[in-house]
Length: 95
Image (cartoon, rainbow, N blue to C red):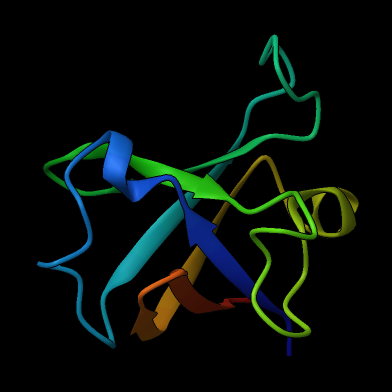
């Protein structure tokens, strides 16, 4: 199993409404000017809600960073929310 952290939610809709069991769509952003390994996190009806963490300061525990995950997933993948924590949202990447 692969676990990831979603961060940056404060720049979009926050994370107060996100609950365990919800689905998040992961979409690679190879043209992102700040990070070539960026993976956007989206939810149906809302669009972008954050990004997969890609820094040792934002990755929670042993979860994968976007850079570590990038070559292991398709251009669009899915993840399930496990925990909503103050520092980010911990998810399990779906096969």
